[in-house]
Every structure is written in structure tokens, then in C-alpha cells.
Image 1: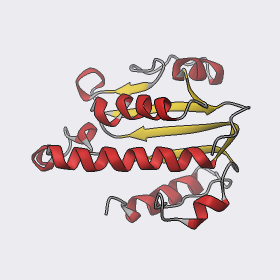
Image 2: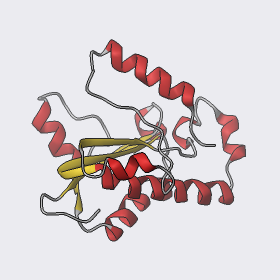
Image 3: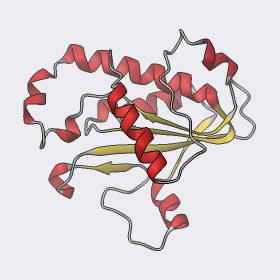
Image 4: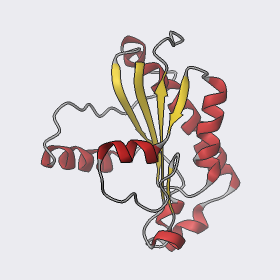
Length: 174
């Protein structure tokens, strides 16, 4: 499968070290998980750390590039779409859906978010740069605009992507 349980466990340890105690981590199986139906519209924030090609980490793992082909990308983008659809139902009206990958490919990032927005009119992108300015007076990191896009070539670090979507208060579609 595409779920890395070891990485999920490490995330739990980091969460505890940071003192975060109001967070649930859950592996979901879109279209197969009865838990999803019971939790519809209950969460203020839902974060998707989407399984992806990992192209953002190629500078550290260059051999990974030889494992990527069109079939893998097609399979992963389908999983990403399923996760966005399933997670959207968990978000309460006025809540936020945060989608992130360690990919630099538009097919896994902007294309996935834009396709989701075309399917679910009750969500809109919150500009990440405005959210940043509302939280801190520190300079924004490179790549922070309406969505966050870090690239190894520009930033000298791994590539990452993040988009913050807000569900409209009057969105009852689930």
C-alpha cells in the first residue's frame, strides 16, 4: 500500500514533543471506512499528508526517480483525489482542509486541488501568504503565495506543497 505506518508513528512522537494533544491521526480507506461516515462534518481542521511520488526528496534520494512512471503517477493521483473527497466530508462548515505533499509535480499538487475545487463548490483556497501574515511578523518563506510551494532548485531544501481550503459556512453538501 501507500501508507507508511512508521512515518505515522514518528509523527505522533513529534506531536507529543510539541505538546499537541488535540490531534487524531487516522489512516483512512476512502469508500471503505465506516468511521468516515460517522465523523461527517465534525472536524475544525483536517490535514492530508498525501501519499505521493516523493519528487521533492529526490535530491536526497536520487534513485527514487527511476521508480516513477506514468502508471505510478496515475495510481497516486487517483488516491489523492479519493483522499481529498473523503477528507472534505470530515470538515465542518467554516473548517479547513489542509492538503500537503512532498512532491514538486503540479499533477499531484495544484492540479489535484483545482480538480477538487471543481468537484466541491463549497470549498475555496485560503491564501497561505495571508494566513502567514496573520500569524507572525516573521518574513514569509520563499514559495509562499496563495499556496506553499518549496522547490530544491530555488530553496536548497526538499520540495513541498501545501494548500489550505476552507469549507463555506453554508456548505451542507457531504
